[in-house]
Length: 329
Ligand code: TRP
Image (cartoon, rainbow, N blue to C red; front, top):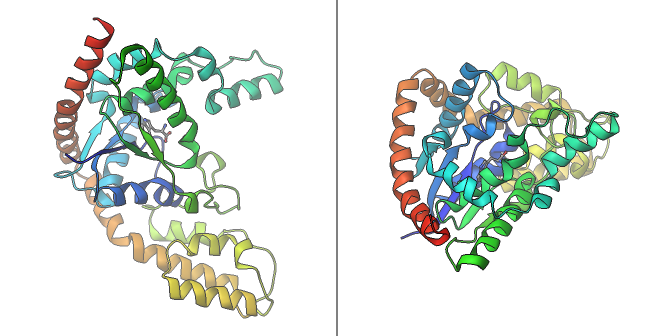
């Protein structure tokens, strides 16, 4: 039996190339060597998404994203978190082994508290308990399947540390019941800049979406911020936001040639943007068609998710039984 790789793509918005490079692509590469369980954490999204139609649609988008990028539902297991009731039972059990102080220090929660304090508001203003216990639900997602590796972006590192901490606390009391998972974080894609040069993130509104119509992608690419150097000027490629994205899509020879052109002078940013756009099209245009086809057939997506949930529960049920037995319920 292969070891298990598990990760979740939160259904909160259209995927962008930061998600693709940081998490989706590395996750899909792991499917060669691991049994993959890649799921849609819709109950995590419920901490912020409050429109039911939107939550359903975003869940389809995330599902279609996995499939369009090449996830094979006959081999990999893809499912909706909310279809696995065992997750929530385990989440309660784990919450009894999670130090509240650990959650107080979780970045996502702490950032909102800090904002509230800075603005002179009551510190827990606008924070629901789901947001506070978010890391416990995530630990349940992972530990329920005996997961060995969790491919994630750097922003999830602390959540994985919390997961490991909770699992170790549990095991200290009951013996080696839970498998201790490891985060897999790709250092080289930690800092994909958005079009404004800050880290690419939906919350900065600086993303390049992967499945948007080509004219919209082009518009975003054209807006990538550069300095005001002329084509003939020598430039540092490692300071350029276009190059920082380009180097993840071009082949080694093309990257070396561009690097040379930057350093020697002769590179126009406008041209470089056109080339980046062409590369993005080459990478994503067929996948975009597949994505659009999938989004047009939600009944098919439901079928895939239901089958996936069945397979996932086959793994989860015995592990939860072991946990229940260990605690004495
Ligand atoms: N918290 C993750 C994110 O925001 C999504 C997620 C939920 C997840 N459960 C998970 C990721 C389990 C990996 C494993 O991106």
